[in-house]
Image 1 (cartoon, rainbow, N blue to C red):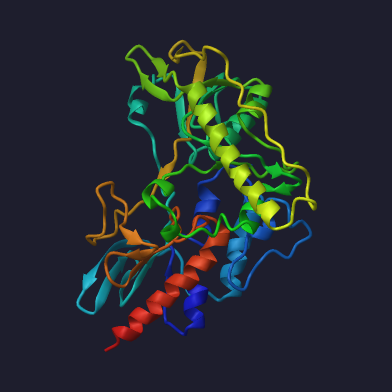
Image 2 (cartoon, one colour):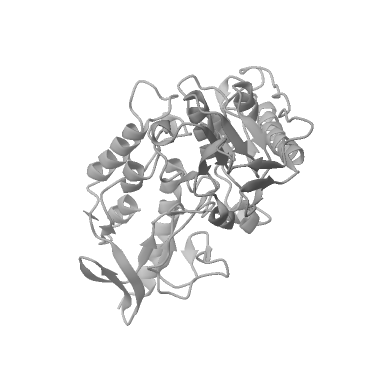
Length: 397
């Protein structure tokens, strides 16, 4: 957004609570790689120029990339400036920070959708003998005490962390809720290549039937591994990870209770994956790619035992750690404007907030299906900066 505003000669500042790429520096586990290929890290006027376009950036490489981009575009970043409130003022908005106040005519909220880890209420009943971490707090297996680990959540983060911890020698039980299974490679190309080429990631918010539901869809069960392998539930059970259903509760005696819908949940996930692959196959056939790529294929169904465990005693010492891989929510505690829905989310129409002159970026499906990807920020910024510039012209003094 800063790059787009600069191109329009719109004076602005970027207020950053710490330093550029702060979240990547402090709230991600050590072995994390981007789940999108290097070529897909495209920003206005800046992209990947290295020798491995199909690889996946490591955490230090992501930090370097974002930092280099800020420097390349001379973004007017004010680091170590924490916003404490944004409120309406006579001439626009008053932004209060711990480094002083700012007056402005427009505000772009780009604080992200993953500020606070969502921990279910059942966490209050975890026995004291069990150590707990969120995915924001987890760094590597060396943090954990010896013994079994329960990972709650089987989307992208949960599967990666479960894989790493199990390979460290600790037995892992994975509590599986709603997720979307996906192959890393399909017909000889990265799944993200197909979704990009077929226009799936460019699908707009005003082209779907139920945008609210689309914004709640969990992330694909993808991982950016050096060998470009698929990390799904079959891969995890293949190395010995035990699967249980969604965590439904924890009794006073320390017994974890799991939903009995694991088989159905996994079958539904397989169905969603195959619908996506069918869509890709249709696009490939329509656009003449069938003879240029490998033949169509499908992964074996997710293997689930006939009677998955419905309970687990986590007070007997078998489970020593719980990792909450149960998602995130944004932090809007500083936003003092009447723009929230009943769930505390900012109301917006494709990133244009319901309060004039306020814009929102970096949340799921803000304007496109790829809005939360590095690759999606550029297109959203172009559209929203167009709207912002028009707003300023129409409301000029």
